[in-house]
Length: 144
Image (tube, rainbow, N blue to C red; front, side):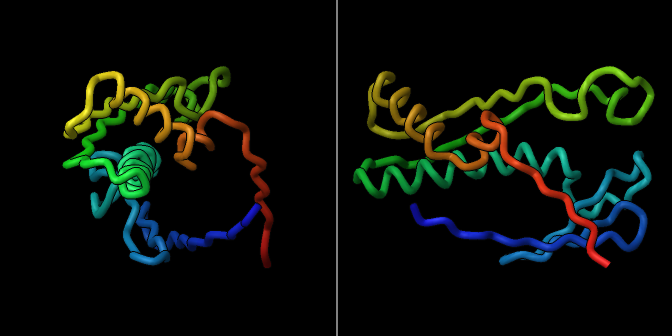
């Protein structure tokens, strides 16, 4: 087993703007109507987009490995969330998505069955999907 540690940094300084330090830095923010400046996607959109991006990336890796002629992969991801719980208006529920759905369109010379098998392999190898499906130990630590 080859374990690698990936690291990103985040910093909140003003309003809801969070600067993300990674291989390609970007900003996460809240929309103006929610008190942010609308400078980037909100954290929930980042989470959902990471799933879609991972499906596309793993699909590309698999298509390269198997020499499949995949022209494009389009993924639309949607998730249901209890915003009342998230905002502290109710005490019962959960903060995370209760269901996430990924709608995947593959442009390739493949039968429907081949595309379904391709999607099954992608889902099995996608780290973001794996983290959504399986519990992952989360260790928050205060650093002073």
